[in-house]
Length: 192
Image 1: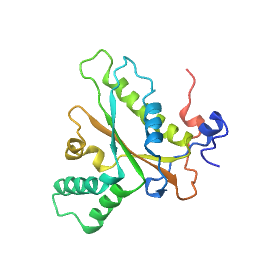
Image 2: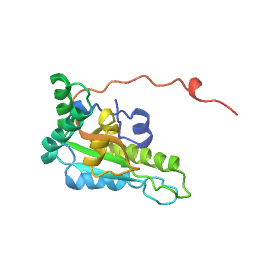
Image 3: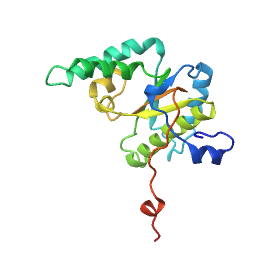
Image 4: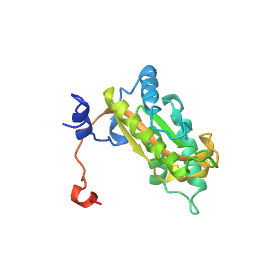
């Protein structure tokens, strides 16, 4: 059983992300989404800089989001984009009931190194997924070409030195989850 919520340790030992394309209704309602974001924001942040921010792309804006992604994708293609590529962009925009775009928003020139600020942003994403699971929802954190597209960042209200840390899709898992390969501890743990 994945995402076993019987105890915190059980959950952490069985935590599994959902593929965004497999997330279906219901998604979190506005009050639940607020709780998820409040919990995500309770993340370690050396310097109390809050070097990240959220952009909610509501269901009612998904067609606009798809049009923006398509325009950005076409602008980045030297050749004309193919129909299957455009269909994939449109599917990306429409998947899952809820979408939160997480922006890494480091404070430049601060005594807290940008690297530590970026680590905080990654922890925000993980806390967001944990909070969604605690409420019984599935989530998937993805990047892809759109996370590295300057026109997408700009359309989301981002500005340098911000970057898209990920697209976090939320909803109810529509398929049975499968385990993925995990590292053998001997391969990733050493003694000093």
